[in-house]
Each structure stands twice: as C-alpha cells, then as structure tokens.
Length: 515
Image (cartoon, rainbow, N blue to C red; front, side):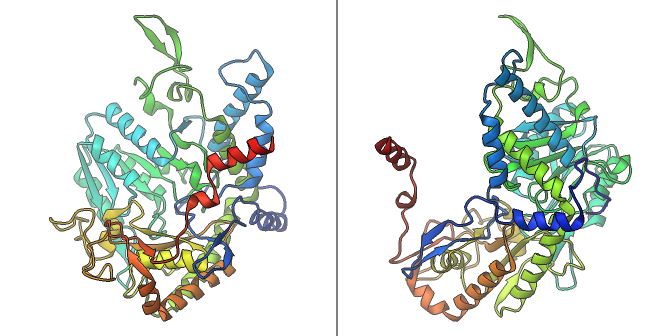
C-alpha cells in the first residue's frame, strides 16, 4: 500500500517462527481435500482457485468458535455465566477487528449484514443523511457493484473516474490526475470518494491513503471497499498523518477465511452523530413506551439491533487475530511471490490474454488473474476446468459489469455500453455450438488465490489451460451453451447432481437412522 501500515496486533515470535506457522496454516482450511467425480470417469481432489468470490474457512478458527459455543447464550445480560461470557467475547471481537485495521478510539466497529454490500449500503444512507448539502460521490471505473450502486441510489450524482494504463494499454490503478480533476470540479458538493482498495477483476491495488488526502483537502470523506484486500495485504485506517486517515472502511468476513461471519463497517463515530439508526429494534434502546422510544448513544450498540450473529463474529475475530499474529506482511509477501509465478506461467501460454497491468514492478496487485483464451468462450473454459481437471474458477463479469465490458472493448471510455446493450450484449462470437450462437453475457475467466494455494496449483492450472487449447475442437463438440444468456456451457453427456454429493435432508436422515 502507499503508506506505512500500522495495526495493533503484534506478530508472535521470530521471523523464522512466523514463516513456519504460515506454512502450517496453509493446510488448516476446511474443504481442501474435497473430491468430485470428473467427466472422464476419474475422481479428483479439487483445486480451489476461486478465493476472490469466497475464501475457504479457516478450520483453526472454526475449532476456536466451537470452544466458545460451549458457553453459548444470548448477549445483553450479565446475570448468568454464559451470557456474561458471550457479551464479553462479542465485545472483544469488535476490538480485534479494530486492532486488525489499526482503528483508534474515534472509530467504531459495526457488524452489518453478510458482506461489504450491507456495509456500503448502510454508509451511503448515513452519509447522505449526515451531509445533505454535499450530493456528489466520486468512485472509479473498477468498482464492484457493491461500491457503485448504493451511491447511485442515494447520492444526487455519481462520477466515475477512469483508470491509468500501462505501456501495453492494460488497465492499472485509478487515474490520480483524473481523480484530482473530478475532486476539484465538485469540491463544494463532494460528499465522499468511494474506492476499492484492490480490484476484484484485475487485482490492482489503489493508493487509498493518498486518495484520502485528496478528498480531505476539499472537506470530503474517503470510503474504502476492502473486500478484496483485507485477506491479502496489510491494511490500516491510519496513514502517515491525519489527512491520510480513512473515514469509512468496509470488509467481508467471507472473503477473509471466515464464511458465515458478518460484514464489517469501521468508521468514524462522529459520522453517526445526531442520526436515527438505519435499523431499530431490541438491544439499542434505553426507554420504550407506546408513544416514545429513546435510542442509546453508545456505539456500536445503537447500530447493531437484534440478536447478533455470535458464531460468525467470533469466527471472524479468531481469524483476524490469527492472521495478525502471523503478520500480514508475510501473508502479502507470500502471495506476491505466488502471483508473480502465476503471471509468468500464464503469460507464456500462447493465446491467453491477461487483463489489467500485470507487471508487478509497475502496478501493485493481489492474487487475482483474469484472462480469456483466444477463440474460446469464458463459460466453456470454466466448465472444462471443472469437469475434466477438478479446478474451481469463476467466470462472467464478477459483479463489475461496467469495468469488464470496458476491458473487453464493449463499453466506451466512460463505461457506457451501446444503447441496445442489456444483460446479454457481447461480442458476436461470444458463444459457439450447433446452430446460430446466442447473444451471451460477455466475461472472462478468473483465477484467484488464498493462503492454501501453492505453485503446484498454478502449475496444474497452466497445464490444464494448455491442454484445453490443444484440444479446443474436441472440447467444443462435448459441450453446448446453456442458451439463457449467462454465458455458461454444459457437457452434453456428463452431469453432476449436487444432491448426490450433499443434501441437508439426506444428512439429517442419516443421523436419525443411526441414532
């Protein structure tokens, strides 16, 4: 990142000990040894390369949650042991999140919804209500829908700033000159700049603290979407000085090795001052009768109505504390090495085009690599990787349609698609098969890494992609497009029924029969 990162969780042990623990952690995830039947009749352990969508769950943290759940009770009481323990651990869970991102006493941590989407929607409403005279929001072309649509819904005007491009014409970080021009042009009306810390499409990292300084210079705020970055690089609310401080930061627990945990808002307390909470109910009031109610001034309590997701909050806190004790500096170093290895491997594959600036000495990026294979639809490539090689990746637009369409040359420099383009617009050759090809969702294939991934995983993916290119005609004849505009493809003969592998009803019945 662009400033010295300060957190409040001290790494444990010597550098050598921390490296050893990082290696031990690599295999401590649920689902790494899951096997599936493949289209060629074999069975294979899956290779999970879809961490930008959701990480696998850290089993160490899961075990810690089970220890806590031996004391389970609801919070909001101190008069029996379980309730007292749960209330204290829930409080400490907030503190651990704050420590992980270097928040200070002027900040609050709020568990909200099931990801960044809930947090950014909440803050878009709060900031619009808190600063009604400032009705402009600036964001960038690389944003996930979660850091775009909430601002469009609640702000008077949203300005999308373009991106820098490297010497090869590949998209990089936000264009800082264009950002400064947009800030200057809307200075008196600018409420906040909303920017992702790292793109979920290209993995490119933005200089969030420099952006915060630019926003603060005109009295605006800086809102950061840390969904993609929090699990991969050191992150802090603080910069080198108060002008670089982040005002609002949102994270998704399911992208930080804690699926099932809530989303998180870390924000300045004063941003909530004088406002009615967005949601009201039990646990946030000091007085209620049939004509009046008085909401507590305490944060985060006033923003967390109802019974909290205690197991999820504990899971997230245990995960973040574990990562902090190992050291996010090591996590970032480890991933950077793997990402460079992957970029080198994939660049050597003829007919594979990587999107976004992929020279790490030019553009800092996390372990996200998006690409297309020449002449092969993204949905077909993704299906083959799964069905024949046991490799789980993602395709389509990754909830970032304006950016993906622009990278594919469909949208113009402002991210605007042709007037007749809806959800199914795309290149005419986006699909192939028997008969006239349907117009399908344009997209890419995305490989993304987590702590559990290794160079062997990269080699496996690279070998599979070369094989797909070599057998392109053969594979085309085995598959057909779904035809619903999604861009997905299915095998003509091989099928996979999820219920044959797992169903809640089947698991319950097996337990009942054995009881």
